[in-house]
Length: 329
Image (cartoon, rainbow, N blue to C red; front, side, top):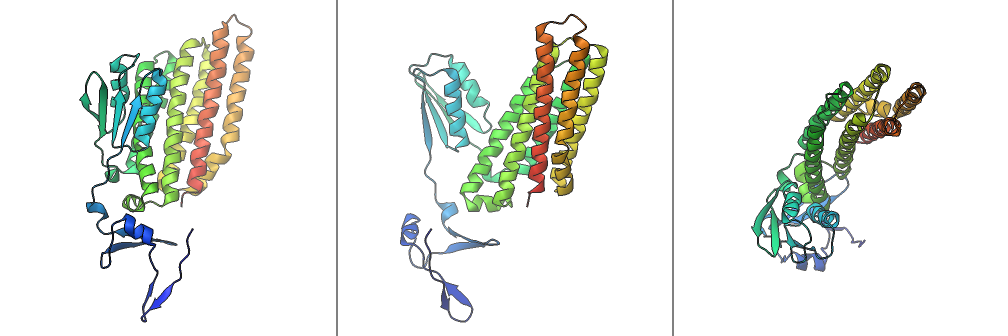
């Protein structure tokens, strides 16, 4: 960190000398205008011509030779989250179907394939992240998660739309990645952060809420699959329905607290996690005690344990949303 002395200038003003390296990097000269934005404890200086200067396009080049599909997917998503303007996937040496690569790209919001040859696929970012409303993204993810919880609960009655739940989990991933990119851009650029009208800590809090929502969605997908592998009797179904209802109530209460910035409820959702966890353990204990008297497959017991484990993880995410609300300033 570099320190500079505050100098008095007339009766009503003060001046601070500017680092020559910053002036040169931004192509400024004597007499140029600089925008000044005041914060609570800081002042942000932005060259007035910043918005009119074309930025240098950043391209990520991904090689596919001797890489499995998971690695290629990870590199594409990493480039997307790092806000590259374009992503070029070189296909020479590709050992997978090109359609699989295109599917990965098309599942990322705002990326469009602009060029495809036998040698490469080029996707460009067409979204203006500065026009994104983060709270609207969170609300959209929230609505999808609520539907997934409802449909997962319907699996208890053997009417389980697993495919639909999996598809909506993919929709949530797209929204989460989009929000993540916007937040990362804002944290690196004070001018963008100002457009969002959120402090750095509020931006971080939004990211954490989106992450917890994404985790809760993952749990619904897994629970729905395990419910199909279990062979629950009427009593077990009744107990699990009641437990799931408690989890859903806690989730709805936590999200309401987030929208209303209700710190007291956020703290209560944090503190009540122990009780929700205890209920999950009690459910598993009682269920296994009843099941042991009957002939069940190993898969049934594994499924029950996995259901309880994922419900506890769902509860932990609700707790973490509560903690985020309590520190959202």
